[in-house]
Amino acid sequence: MSFDVERFARVLLHTMPDAVIYADAKGIIQFWNAGAERIFGFGPSEALGQSLDIIIPENLQKRHWEGYDKTMSTGESRYEAGALLAVPAIRKDGTRISVEFTILPFREESGEMAGIAAVMRDVTKQFEEMRSLRKKVAQSLAAETR
Image 1: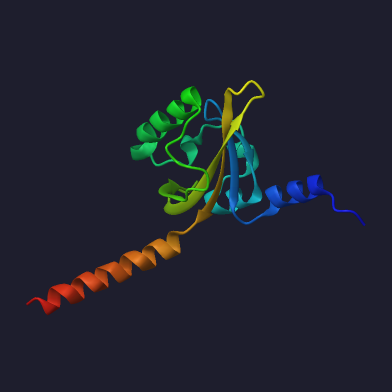
Image 2: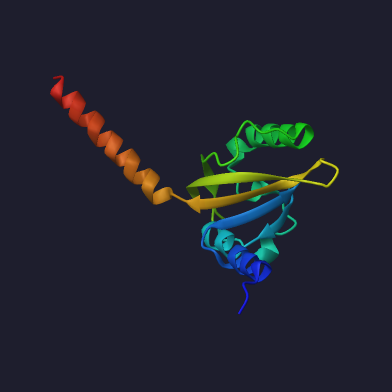
C-alpha cells in the first residue's frame, strides 16, 4: 500500500485537535477545522466567510489589523517562520482564552500575498497556572523582605 500524502494532509488538517485557520488577504476566514471549532466554539458555517474579528478581543483588533494589513501589503511579517506567538483570543461565548500559534504566509504564484494560515493551541490552563505561580513567588519574596 502506498502512502497518499494528499489524503494524509486532508485528514490531518481537518481532524487535528489544534485549530487550523486560513484567512485571505482581507482577513476573511476561508478554512476552519474541527480544532478551531473545539477551541473557539464556532462551527464552520458560522466562521467561514467571517472576519477574524470573531476571535480577536475588541481591544486588540486595531493592533492586529495594522500588522495584518502591513504583512499583506509588504509580504513581510515581523514574526519569523516558526515563531511561537502568544495572545489573548475570544470564544463564541465571549470567554477570553490564551492561545499560542504560528503563522504561515501564503502567496499567489505572482508573489503577491494571498492570505495567512495559523495553527493555534489553547494554552489558557497553562497560562493561568503560570500566573498563579508568579503571584505566589512574588508574595513569598515580599514576605521575605519584611
